[in-house]
Length: 262
Ligand SMILES: NC(=O)c1ccc[n+]([C@@H]2O[C@H](COP(=O)([O-])OP(=O)(O)OC[C@H]3O[C@@H](n4cnc5c(N)ncnc54)[C@H](O)[C@@H]3O)[C@@H](O)[C@H]2O)c1
Image (cartoon, rainbow, N blue to C red; front, side, top):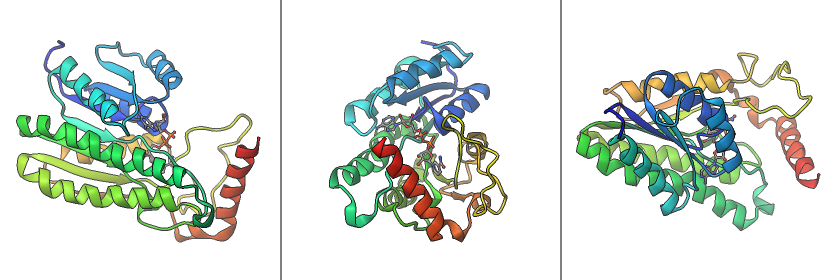
């Protein structure tokens, strides 16, 4: 077992925002277990990280199942003897109108986004309570606070995560464990070939999309402050109410539909 260092688990940590959080935490000196169900992304991430597997271990698993969630938490305990931070980041994001929504997609969204957050938190808590310290940071979304057409399953699942954060903060607080939720606006990290990031989003007051580093750095207050029982971090600068403006929604939907029919 490695020397006693602070240890974190990040779900969905092999790509996108999750990978940036992993990088950031490892850069801050933490030992990190990242779990992701995409095995190719896990292999890619492990190759790109400069830290050895004793510092950042990327494992494959589905956190929407009890086995997957258990694997994530137990890897941290087995390798580092502790768990100081759980970041529930993994999520799926379907885009469908309610009228046409397939029940399978709806259920899968709740299984991954909500069940995954609940299972990992449930398994992490006994260790944090034993340590009398720890932090759970859920990655919510502005969509859990504000509606947008086409986002019913995702938005409802993120709203559920926000309320779960509040309930868990009340239950875990007396044991020295803080529970917080960060709600980012639009974060861009994966461009299709040929797509330009220079596009200026008119619906975002700051005039640019957020970056994964914005979330990873905005993440630290929930980790460090013992004062926070819960905080819904609301990154308003990437969002404005034009988000539900029809052309924005239909453009996004059209893009999604055209990807599907390819
Ligand atoms: N990108 C944005 O604009 C944005 C905005 C607001 C909130 N968020 C939230 O930030 C988080 C990360 O978003 P992202 O854009 O990096 O997403 P992403 O889809 O790029 O990455 C999510 C990762 O989670 C993994 N994953 C999905 N289901 C899993 C499961 N069942 N078990 C294990 N891993 C699983 C995926 O393989 C993927 O690597 C999500 O919670 C998302 O809802 C993103």
